Length: 456
Image (tube, rainbow, N blue to C red; front, side):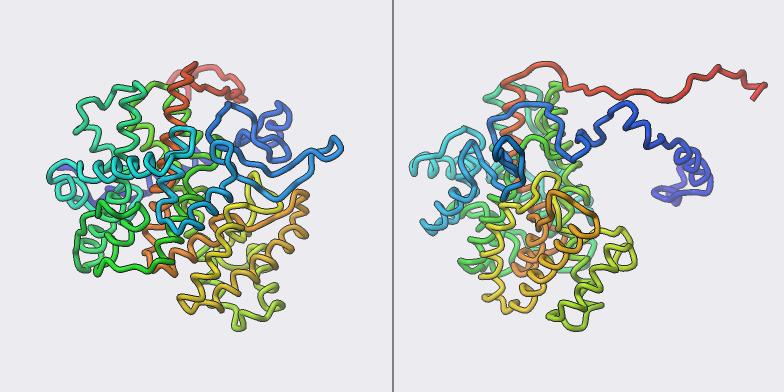
């Protein structure tokens, strides 16, 4: 019998071997010598152009008198400003902004009212197709404390139930994509319910999604014991899903989707790869780091309205003297945006309204103060020429907290939204199928002769 006590433990033998791995560091100067674009970015942080897309566009600078200058960020879905999309469904007092955005991303055009209703009916129908006993046998069988891993495990198990799993024709991939868009909320909520019951020793309840409700409404309906939620809660969660649905082909998880899709693999494997990318704290898990940082600030700053005290503590964080020692104010700054992240700007107004409903105005003011102070500090201390602004992660965790959503679901909510963007990019990659994506790496290790065992 294997020694299961050693499973998941780093033994002294492994620790010693690991030291050999860490000795093999590449000289940082070699990246400049060979003009290597680390992280596929140039020296100014701009992404290296590796592909073309019609799905979305991120604007962070404009040409003025022949020079490139930073500007307020803009985000376009299929050429339409996200701000206008949001204004559209908000003015109509609809809860189906996410469905409208998903239709636009997948099919390249805005749906008519009849087309949107038909699309929502299609998604509602797919919410009923989880295989018999799937929740019991797959989701409940071995619950994980990490909901993203549980969703990915469920996703890969669905491959076994799909008799056309390997068919990568566009109609079949679209069918698979619509199914995943429909059932991702169920995989996430049920995985959390299983974790809460088995691992946390809480109560267990499973609510079936309602065909008349939108994705945002169903998430709240399935998650809450009494199925109840306010109109503002549903509107803001719907907005959050829209703003997280897509963000260009170059973000880590979407680029992963393109890379893996280019190999010709199946939909479940491609989306599982994207999920694995998204769960990282430098990507989809960033809003959790923001929440942890704010909890630390609240413990160590006595007066949230005292700008001097806030400034002093934020300086400690930047100098690696406080919080996690990383020297990072989480939620500030972005790889592309400089003056502003349009998603954060759109979100902020709704966050303030929700803070009033939830009697969290003081906490909202704390966020606003830190956003202003930290941006100024980072720009000054790090000499960042392009400017620093709050990104979507800065406020999203606060919103989810006010919605009384469990922290374990923060990153899964990102996945529930982004599955629409991933699906659109997967279909685009297959439609324009070319060579497998294979960038180059230069080996900088000196060559050595092989030494016979007895001579080592």
